Image (cartoon, rainbow, N blue to C red; front, side, top):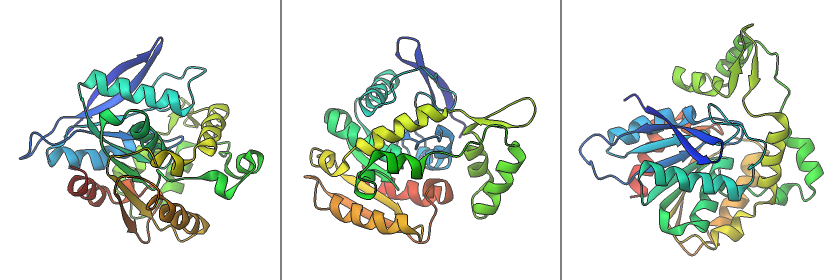
Amino acid sequence: MTPVIRCIPVAPDVALNVRVWPGGGADEAGTPVLCVHGLASNARTWDGVAARLSDLGRPVAAVDLRGHGRSDKPDDGYDFATFTADLVTVLDVVGWERAVVAGQSTGGNLVVDLAARAPERVEGVAGVDGGVIDLQRRWPAWEDCAAALAPPRLEGTPRSAIQAHLRRAHPDWPDEGIEASLANFDTLDDGTVRPWLTFERHLRILRALWEHRPSTVLARVRAPVLLVVADTGDDWAVAKRAEVDLATTTGPGPVDVVWFSPADHDVHVQHPVEVAGLMHERLN
């Protein structure tokens, strides 16, 4: 099913690009799902998951966060409080009193934060290789984190080169997933790209993520939490196991954990039907 594209104002002179799928299938009353992408990503990475959830009867909305994709790119508002306020406004405008909120990577931490800040709006939380990211456990000093995780400077790279790299790195991704990842970039008339999210804003969001302590936030989340975790077979996977172990003993609500092994960080792009099925079955 093709999504409806909506432009939703969330603040003066700031509107977000939102892709909306109506519920279909047998269960027209399925709980809606709001999907949030990761840092420097975009709403289209949720297309495969959203299409399957829509078929299962769930209305779905996937949002380009401010500064990303086709949304407006103001100079400020790149902190968790503003991002979550934007998401509440999206829920208001699409008319959903309560929803399951799903986020990948940094987006996972954002939806956990949303569940703590606005518990009356959240039916359940899905963190897809995210939600429990605690960068301070790995890099106690912000300067070390910034040096390790600063994004590459890709401005001026041919789009064809980015596409070829994605296909080599992710040979089992569907074509739609490759195109969705390419939508992280604006393609210029000369065939080169530039990231929609600027380098400086990327670092500001990374700093906000570094400051976020998910174990503390999860202690205030009473909605059920599903963690869909990718075993990427690297040092990150080791760190994630420690973060997941802490999460399962922190929150007052239930935390359900499912590992995909092996899997990519963008496991929702790699295995959209399976991830959608888990969300549908375990977060009603």
